[in-house]
Amino acid sequence: MNNRKKRYAINTALVLALFVVLNTLISVGVIDMYYEGIIMMIGINIILATSLNLTTGFLGQLALGHAGFMAVGAYASALFTLNAGAGLPDILLLVISLLIGGLMAGLFGVVVGIPALRLRGDYLGIITLGFGEMIRVLLINLEITGGPLGLRGIYPLTDFTNIFWIMVIVVVVIFSLMNSRHGRSIISIRENEIAADAVGVPTEFYKVFTFALSAFFAGVAGGLFAHYMMVLDPKKFNFMFSIEILVIVVLGGMGSITGSIIAAIILTVLPELLRDFSDYRLLIYAVMLLGIMLFKPSGLLGTKEFSFIRKRDKEDMKTEGLGGEE
Image (tube, rainbow, N blue to C red; front, top):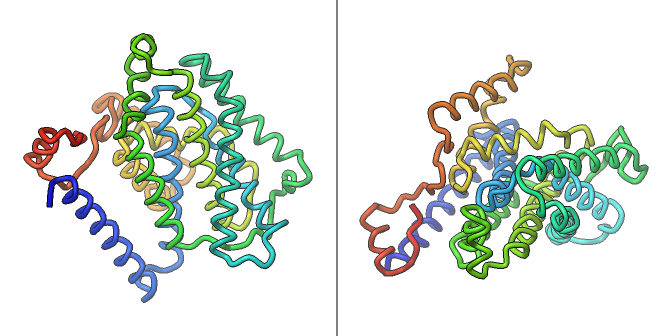
């Protein structure tokens, strides 16, 4: 077995083992409904963080409206199941609704991305921030979305199993993309857009493509969230929620998928551990960010990826020309 197949086999075995262990503990009642809910929210936050990392970490563009894309996906997915889902099996209904939610969010990503990505830095951040707030105000004022009272009676279609495997699919897709020729083109834009343009990289295409793909996955996360919570409150998708997702990306390391996964676990579990001090949660986030900026400015993993493969195996893969992400 060559190193590439060995790497895939180890990762597949670890993912299967994690699923079997968690699913068994949930089935026998060792993990109760409260902790199962936390695990499901970890899965949704991993999808959100890794998708935002595409735009902010790998593409190098500041985006502050990720909660808006999640809201578009959540409401589109929920409205589909409420109005056109009668008679379909649950799993088929969930898959179709998630695709609709993701595609709607991706479409908004293209519409916002084409003009917004001509800007850079703070200006792009302001545009995406305005988009997120515009979506929230529309949701509050539209009758079809339930207005300020929110959308209720959404079918409970998501459980631990489908959240776990959709999260795995999203992470694998993003990891495969970033280790492909297209991923290297996206990273080249982050490193030096002028140089990337000069050597023939279609920078405008990759910027809009990455922005739309990031919005698509945020919409999928929104659909999972809607069918888990069964109630959508437009106030949930505010500016602070976008900041919370950005904090996960910054804490894990902008440009590290495994860093986003680790940070999503930490920042989903931490508020539950500090439930008695919930008023100070944002203060704790601020202190954590200050600590990271002072002592580890690149985040927990920077641009590196955590791997169980030994260093010698990685060097062998590099020799074979198979990447071997550090």
